Image (cartoon, rainbow, N blue to C red; front, side, top):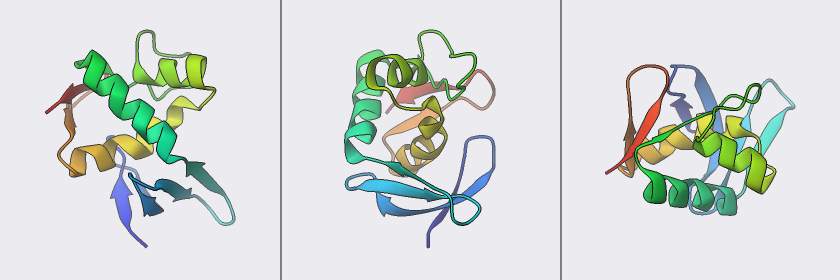
Length: 107
């Protein structure tokens, strides 16, 4: 199973792909499914708004961030940003600033 790291350096295991959707594995038996549609929303937000804040916090939501858009407009946890963003970076889609607040830049 592939392993990646969040932008803060925390390792996670996953299956699937950015194109087909992801399953993130936490302490067994917990998982989080991230549909391809959510990943596409994240991509589109980065394309439209770059540079844009990541905003993976649930409470409080980070104003004017991709995470806030996911929570308020798509009923999705902003925490999915923690798992999708490193894979988008690895594929060469975007970069992120080195420190908080994390700012995403489309390449």
